[in-house]
Length: 67
Image 1 (tube, rainbow, N blue to C red):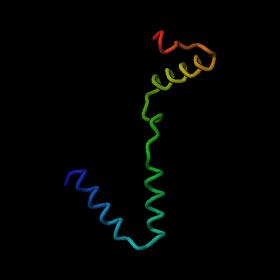
Image 2 (cartoon, rainbow, N blue to C red):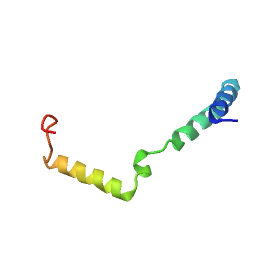
Image 3 (spheres, one colour):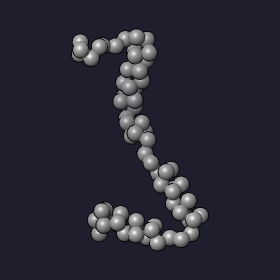
């Protein structure tokens, strides 16, 4: 079974659930499973972003038209 078919089957199962507490638990689980992009970056990428933010905060920037 491919991922799209699995998703459709999962939605069908969820739609048939009558227990409100169970739906709340499923919702909480899904929300907790969302991946924060920051954690997907390696340390070097995180450092570069932090350096860029620090530079912007100190007024170091290039205007779009100059870029």
